[in-house]
Length: 152
Image (cartoon, rainbow, N blue to C red; front, side):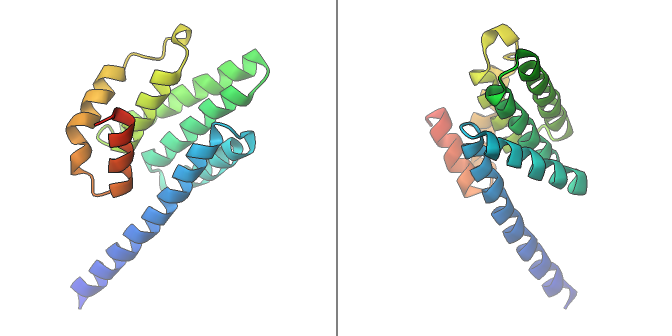
């Protein structure tokens, strides 16, 4: 009986996490072109990170900050958002270095950050990690996204 209850709990948790990730991934896609979506991503990611402590939510929060840097007009505010995003993303990678989604976020960010900002030192490392490990993820949406992004 206990085994059935544990299996049911894990299945429900997995479904809820999957639905939750879809919501965050949708906000991630729209946040680059919408300041409102970027703010919503920051707000929801902050709440989720504070509640769970999951590094993945820290990664989403970091990307929200990068998007706000893009939307900000004031150069000082741009740098503030960028530096905050950079710190949060590096903390997320340190906390969960084997997380494919966090490493993908860092790869995409570093490939798209202006070279003058000097945030490009992990591109080859993250690309190689993703190529080597993406087949092992049970998350089919993430697997397809990685394949498409890396042209595999």
